[in-house]
Length: 146
Length: 300
Image (cartoon, rainbow over all chains, first blue to last red):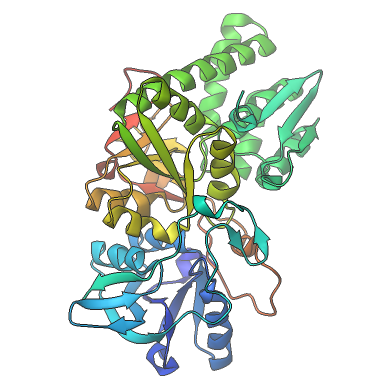
């Protein structure tokens, strides 16, 4: 897909509890490393016939810069008085959204599917590039103020 | 030399030997190039890039005994990179030496010396206990920076952002720094904001494929996001640039790589969604704290 063909994208970060939250928008689905949540999310969106396009996480900045994203939907894990607990990488998405004045909508989401919890930057799918686990920054639950 | 990636392309007896970066970190293998066509395949398939593509261009000129035609052919494959600038440089050197091989050797040796000197200047700019976030791969120069930092009695730990989809940060930067015995940690690209917010990193170093006099740079996709986040957190961003030109970078065609490459390194799946793959992005000058040119005195 060409960049010129996409506009008014709704960026999705995290896993939704309710897929109706995604209805009616052209959805931008990032990879969501290290878990690759974006791929399984796209499979579901295809079944639902929701329009979507996929990128790696590091492409988001450029898409914000080009004014391609109109809204961010952030699916959080937990909400409290001070804000939200969110998946690894959420801070990256929220900061980039706010620095480009793109509104962020927080919605209740789901946790990381079983079997994926131990993934990190050292590998992707079954390919392990770095075995020295001490040299890898572990994924975190990230806190975001509301 | 502590890293083969500092000098990934070599020439001997009519054959160019290219370190196949796509096979790293699993194997250190070399591809032999004897024609322009083979050189273009190597370039297109990202077997080498950054300083490697500079060397590949020069040595292909030697094979072809032609500077301009080779530049045009290379530019078609990698429109973001300034091969015409390299052609001008080579023509100037050729006029002085009268021999293409001597002209290339002169340029390459000068580059190597300037990269070492630049690494020293970068090391001087870093704080005494430097924690440096970086993206993609700058052809061995971070190893030089690491060595220069230690010579100055400072300490450094690099944080290599994995750089999807090709994973140059993981496969090249992390690999070469660890192999050289320089402290390094690996992160997913999306963990940069958390590292900055929590005070883990205190500098960012990036390379650049193109730069202009204004100070804007074009570099691997993800560079803009890092620079913007660093600027927001008051973290200095240092860009390694070469020969900035009077050019409007917004007019430079950003290379769009084949869509399927977005899924690189992933196992096969039944459904692969439609994807976007802009391979580079533009970082405006206002987000960069200091530019380190090859030549001291051109820095801003």
